[in-house]
Image (cartoon, rainbow, N blue to C red; front, side, top):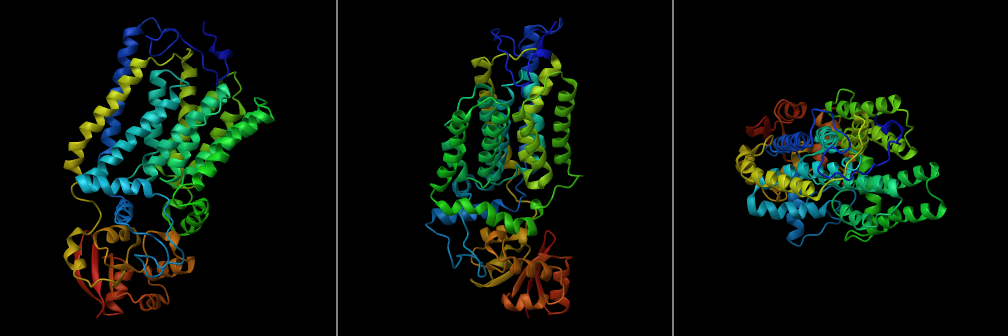
Length: 491
């Protein structure tokens, strides 16, 4: 009879029988050999499915901006005021994602657009691997694989061709590291240089510091650590904050979460509260529901740090669609532990050959994805490529009014043009953004924005209010249409 019902949920029971991927005792029919084949078969299916989900044509509006930023930096460009691209910013553009932007620009120079699609696929494989690293600590092969895969699927909305994808990979590593610290109370000092790299890659590095603070406070509430231990562990997020200030951007990087979030929460869709109908949110909430049911059915009381991790996951999922992936990554080890506990078996150690086998499997998938990405991603989706000749003929420095989600592409393919507003919403004043939104909806006073910005061309949706207003009320004429967009010119 198993005694796991008397073992706390956060306890890892060692197993010396490394040949058994599941660890512990097996049912009669589940021999060690069958268990091994089952775990490797599931691993193969999950890696193949993740690779397939990760491969698609480039469709997100943001990678164009990051390509432009990367190439601009490689060419020796610098941001400040006046802005080198846009004529009406209120504050300088702060480079929160410059490292992956440079990497993307270099890869694009070698392989073009398929390289960007391949990077998305690789980021999903990395997220799967990082999440498996955190789940395998608390569960055997099959439960940990299932939990990691479900987490990757739930994070799918955020796994686009953008630097934020690397944030979720680093978050999974951070959660796994702090989970281990909660078990053995040993500080993982390597999280400090990890934060330094993270701070050069994406703005969600602050979430990693927040996870550390929450875990230390929860351990103190659990009376697992004294003041001296708490101070030592809190030094990790504190020094991580210092490391972020020592990136090439400097201390001003510490203020960017406030400036970006301020405009984003009002004007960017992904910063809005999560819709209850969002399938990714539903999947993440289902993960947490399974964990809750497992806790209710179990006689073991979860420690405060696990309750806190579940609470942060729930808040992240409901806060905004942008952070659903954060909630999914945090929920993964909790789900894996719950699935393992339901099996009533102890957790086995990971043999070195299994770890190396997994890395070989993921590497093979990334290599196979290269030619597939080349075939699938030669042409971008959702951008008016057919209007390139007309756009190229517009004189340099001309102000153009464009749909905000197409301005990143416009900055990349036609850098000589000056958008009245672009996808970098954080550099504009709220008043400028509100006026732009009213203009696109043809609300009273919309023509004043056209005149004040000296816009003489417009790239807008064909069946939009602004397209109708420009043609019927201001006499603008079309120069061409493509992919549902029309290029208009002032008379």
